[in-house]
Image 1 (tube, rainbow, N blue to C red):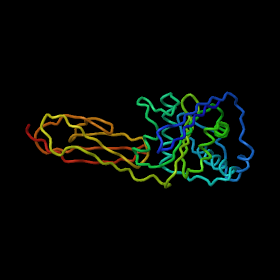
Image 2: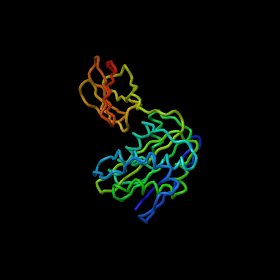
Image 3: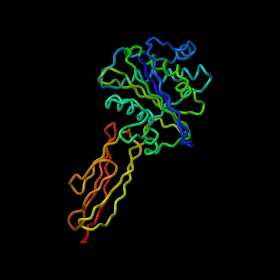
Image 4: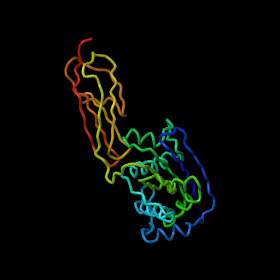
Length: 277
């Protein structure tokens, strides 16, 4: 069973096309032209796939099949962008672990495009194909690509002439379903993730007992990020935004610790003077 869902989007236009497609047949095959174009670059199919795990072999296979489909249509291949690959992996894992299947990310109904913007990824054209399958590991990737190509909307994303880069994420959930995400965009390609970076804003002089808000903006690294805020040594919250009450009069330090999906740790600190109200 394959359940692909594709969403192309042009950043300059607010409207987005959403296509939901459920295909019940289990034996869909790749178009012969795609199979021929992919043959020379196709890596071996995965022979096994553990639950609650990514499959680099499946990801590499879907990369080859996507570019094989483009080659069969006379299009240039897409380059793999490390930022999109990181986001695609997160999307597949997040859907598998939290039990949803949608371009809308709960609970706030944001999209991966919103996340791209917060990470500083700029593009005019971008798109997302998502799908899941319960096919065996050896055929799951081919089944998924065949389903994508059978859908006009998903196929249009794969064959978009305006795209330059893409990223693929493949994750098997605890229920044995394999979740695939393919993200496309135009613009400069980054083959390596940019360094994790964070900037923050907080008043450097505050009144004792006053309620204070601090915010952080994080770019680079691998999404998602985990945040920890500390006032001196006391933990005061998590997330990109934290609100806290200042303590005793004197000199203090506000600290931020950010950890990305690969375990890279970034620390930032700001001096804060607490004065009598």
